[in-house]
Length: 251
Image (cartoon, rainbow, N blue to C red; front, top):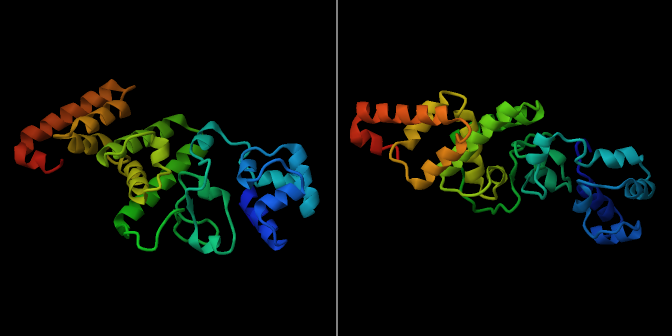
């Protein structure tokens, strides 16, 4: 299928022959028990073995892996599955774009992707947040695939700041692949929000912020001290003009 991932295709091939993945790989003499190990690096000899067993061209096998990615794309591609399409998964499919940090809707059927460990009783997230996150995901994809470091830096600054507001610690790249859907959506939504008057939004959020939020701001703007100074200046102006009660309401 278009955009199918090698490990998913091998699983379907194994199921068609009444085997599991390990049995199929052992049968064609590939030294791994997990097809996922081949998604990022399949040697030419192994691709040849798979092509002979499945009667396809070796280039077809290679085309289902994550090869020839830019550095930006590699940074934003998950090593393990973190989301999937509930509709296509029922058909045994595993598509490559599901691993992208910016993937939001299934490109095959249009269904909203869900985290891999989602439970039926999980709380439904607000539609407004989903719409903003979808917009942020599109901006992140453009930043990554256009190979423009300045756009990616801007997006990751927004993610870092979004993490601080949700009191999430760790690597921003991990937050975009978080198993907690509300964290991932909030960070993607922050990318969209940062496109419109980002300094004003940062200043509003920083008014009366706790220590961790302040550290996140420093981290987000560590290479641009003038921006951080501008945020402080705007926050001070707002505090003087709105008074202490209004300022506190933004905490």
